[in-house]
Image (cartoon, rainbow, N blue to C red; front, side, top):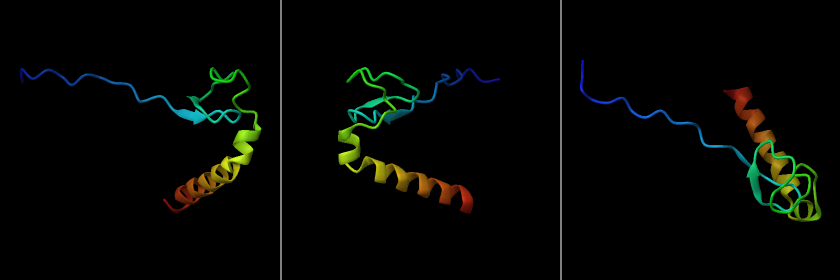
Amino acid sequence: MSDTPAPPKGRPAPTLILCRHCVQYVFAGTEVCPHCGHDAKEIGPRYRDGDYEAIEAMLRIEEALRRRHG
């Protein structure tokens, strides 16, 4: 038996996503954005005009391809 202490147990980092209204990071699952006070899932003009919808779609496609091809 070793006298070396066991490494501390940690937790995974929280997942952050963009508020689709003000484009600020919020915790995944946030309903009301603490930055702008809007529904974090509702697409606002800043998100739409910044082409974030297109980027999000590309990321979903890339993830689906990764899962399909292992």
